[in-house]
Length: 139
Image (tube, rainbow, N blue to C red):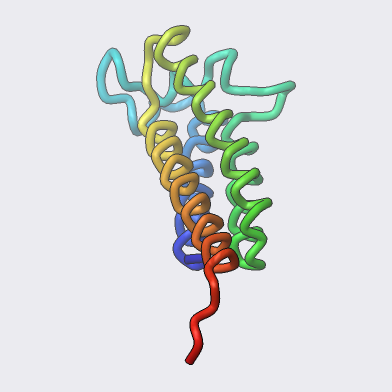
């Protein structure tokens, strides 16, 4: 399970790097699809930074931290980190829907990844907890 979570976290890093590239680019965004889907508008909005730090850069660091926690089997801290990332991504989803009225393909992919990571990390911790609580069976 830790390798699957690590792989998904690294996919999140990749998506965040692509979003960060759009954030610093002045060219037309490669994911400018139509009037409702435009990564350039989302990644250049006032919501694309937190205290001057691009949200995509926060995503890169966060996903790397999650990958590290998964590799060293820190299930509880992994779940806490993923939950924090999920809440942050959920906030950004509401910003896209209700403030910007615009969607970013990279952001939606990242939000899907963090939601999947939340399910997997909760399942991993739950399975570990269940294994500890189960009575041992005689051989």
